[in-house]
Amino acid sequence: MRKSDAVVARRRAAERRGRRSETWAALLLMAKGYRILGRRVRTYVGEIDLVAQAPSGVICFVEVKARGAQGLAGEALGARQQARIARAAELFLARKPGLAGKGMRFDMVMLAPGTWPKHIRDAWRPGIG
Image (cartoon, rainbow, N blue to C red; front, side, top):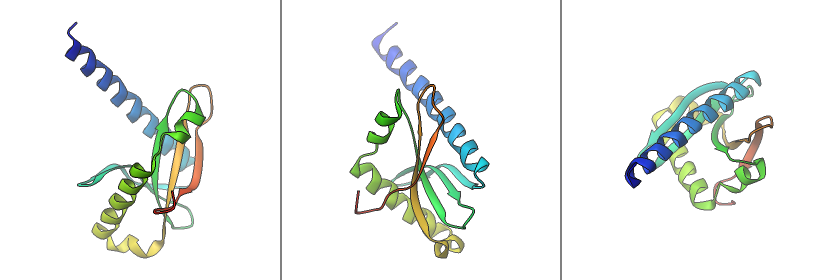
């Protein structure tokens, strides 16, 4: 196997893990009464893993992180990524003016082998970190 083949195989495996993790996160949120509005929402500044509406009506932009341990998943969301997701969220709401007045927050779902997924509401606020 050539080096480039190994890189492609790793990327495909990571893609499969990411999709599976996002599916688990979406199922968790739906079990809690959330309505999934979008998965892998793409904008020109970046992608939002999940967009969901909480039972209270608030629009949640959810970042899904899967790592070997939940602590590692929590540390995997840096300030630059938070800023990128916040900009993508603003663009998403600009395209959906009916949702703009509902309020918004940034959540996180962390997944690790052998543990239940952990949903962190209001995991960060743009500009605060």
